[in-house]
Image (cartoon, rainbow, N blue to C red; front, top):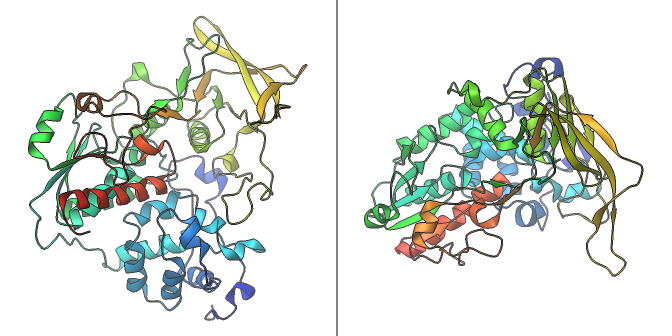
Length: 480
């Protein structure tokens, strides 16, 4: 391949995506589905960056404020270590975001106004993987410790981000995780076909080699009291996530075969990781007609998992209307666009239906057998206000269902013994209230991620964890 020309590269080269492994291959295993671009492809893509005077990808798109035009320039000039240092200055977990982030930076790319945006996520992934391949990411424990100890409760993306920043600042960090292995939703909620767990294990080993301690299988509030932590730590950071799922209280909800999405995904991830699953509690889609209620990412993950488990047929139903195929006028550039998205799971099989409401679950012998549904229109009230679903007369239909998975989002962090023990104040939504530094109503106790901001993107949880760590350091009187 001839060397790309960066001058007006955005006019010379088209966008190139990595693509997926062949469908007939990838739906038979749980290995990563996305391919990788070659170094030549990556360099050509960085040539498309326009060095904008105002880089909206950096300032308005990326929750982490990644310094995108600058690391693109370093990659183009093959200064990989410099690019890595720029990336790590704003993002402590780029091997995660480089694989599973929906890339709001790309939807804010100025080139996207009238062309396809730069493949920023693939560039980010190439940088961090080159860093590991070339040995730029050796363990570098802090030269000295600050004499401060912080407990981080939860090892998901927010918790890992908090721990990484605090440890590099010389704080002694202990991460408590109730599960058998660290990683939170990264390990147990996101399927291996999107994030293989060796990626996570590599990062966890590096963090451990740099001095972060992980205490696994420990439920704080049950195995350890809040008094124990308060006596031994200078600060506590809560990063337990939003764990209480939104339910659908309809006739027949108590029938067997109706489950929340997350336990279903967790079980499969435990199987893939070699952890035992009680046969009496096993949830599987094998040879079943599966209906997934909810059209978001979690629903798509359920769809991809059900196909791989050998489901006979899979439907994904969404009450919202189908988004347009291209960016709508309601979400102009550089906003996150309202547009139809298809994940690798959707491209692997199954059927999607939009504007569908569920009326009831119908069963036999105590188990679900079908859903009774109806099409809806979204209508704005005559007096103004938000649109609401209205059933369309004569559109009722039934759909076969041996397994129903509720992927309807999350309504709060759920009950937490540590939060209750400390008397921490919640907001009107049921999430933990905090101040500008991330501190809760209990002095010295902080919160980050979905426990306080609600269920959101992994990249937002990482950004929030890094910001919260800054608040902890200020509280401890330490420089960041």
